[in-house]
Image 1 (cartoon, one colour):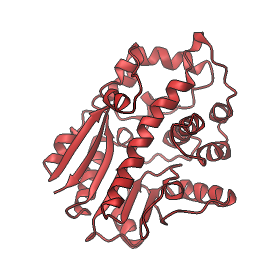
Image 2 (cartoon, one colour):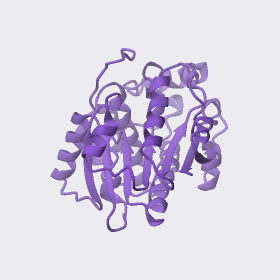
Image 3 (spheres, helix red, strand yellow):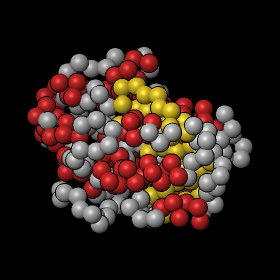
Image 4 (cartoon, one colour):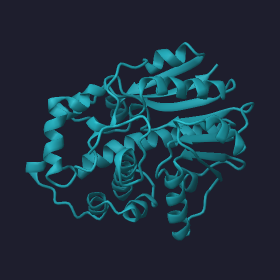
Amino acid sequence: MSTRSESDSWDLATSVGATATMVAAQRALSSAAGLIDDRFAAPLVRAVGIDVYSRLVNNEIPVTEEHEFDPDRMARGMAVRTRFYDHYFLDATRSGIRQVVILASGLDARAYRLPWPDGTVVYEVDLPDVIAFKTSTLSKLGAESTAERRTVAVDLRDDWPAALKAAGFDPQAPSAWSAEGLLVYLPPEAQDALFDNITALSVAGSQLACEFVPDTTMFADERWRAHHERMSELGFDVVDFNDLVYHFERSHIIEYLTQRAWQVSHRTVAEMHAANGFVYADDDVAQAFADITYLNAVRS
């Protein structure tokens, strides 16, 4: 796997794009376990065609002690993440917000599966090939969006605010933003630019949800590397986060947003597990990721 470059590109089977397929596969596990409701995740994963993720959603990967592969743990972890964003969007729109922007939407099917209030417009922002693939695949499945879905086919490293406004986004109306599973794949200056653009497009009352990874060097941590090697023996070597994330010191997101008139609330992934009634594992791998933080911010 090659490391990142300033102008690199990908589809849903390679590089950063493959992480979207991986996340969808984990959502499929969560849905199959009854922890969330995402009937579109598995067929989208199968349509991409990455062998290990197709086998994952088809329950064709053997569970063995030697490999530490635990689909139930994987399902719980993704349920925590998915419920966080699902509840965030539903709470935001029930409070009156009618503009939703999903940045790096990947294989996210919320525009098709959440019970959006009447009049909600969902903007999905991602690369043209990613948008086209998901739209085509869901159309073939007979899926219909439950909100007015507007796609914005643009690279987030380009002038995406202009493309978003061209699609009908109103900067004078409150909006609900998400940057799910995105920030670690941006260089530090691009992360700052993303939040600056969101802030410029957000009037008072707008909301934002994302995760904050305090230290990306965890992907080079020997505890994670040992786990990654064991999982690779089962075929989970499509994605190596250590090659995909940018290992540079970056702005502390909570502080950055607070300085820009956002009121931020946050909980760690371990606290989120407890809030969902799950026990957070106490092994080395889990502890390496225990400080990952989910945050919800309101523009004041």
